Length: 77
Image 1 (cartoon, rainbow, N blue to C red):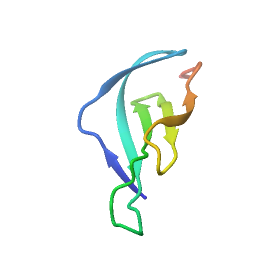
Image 2: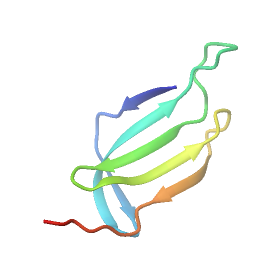
Image 3: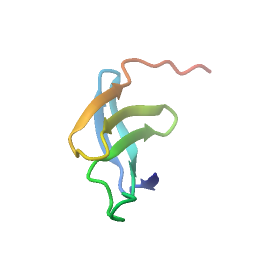
């Protein structure tokens, strides 16, 4: 498995609000062919908050099948 932190930030809207986020894309290299898998997992993080959104797909399918979204948060002093 490999992870690539994407250079540009993205605006992500979830139930907890709208956040400027960094995206880490995770993929695999297929052992049989050496090709990069069509499926990707994407993890979106916002500075000072943490994980905002996670999109998970299977290795062989680029369509994501599961999501984990931030629905609320609290920042303590």
